[in-house]
Length: 170
Image (cartoon, rainbow, N blue to C red; front, side):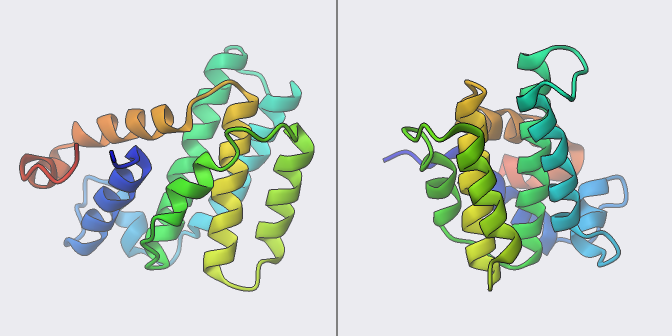
């Protein structure tokens, strides 16, 4: 079975976190700096993604805006997961769990409410990934493609050359 691109993306960010700070990389600095809270930023991006989904947050049109904001939610959620030291396959499972659900905005809201009150990091992440999957499918986005796009962009960064040259990601 093929690995989900989210697993590869999380692995790449984990590798970056394990390296010395790459000063040219904002992501590297965030992964090493406690002054930035990735979870707080993820929730901020959620506000924008929810706005896209309900039509109140518009930049360049629904398709573009949904892909942009879903990518931002994914980015910050990945950084939160890596900063918390959580590496487990449940991330991609949660992301894909909403594939056949038809709960729309109500389902997304339930997942997000669960994340906010979750008693531990793993429960919070499970709810966040499920919410993002539900949001992607609600917007007719493939969450795997969102992860693939982010991974491709990351692979072009000079500070990630050693990681990708070693063939660590597909």
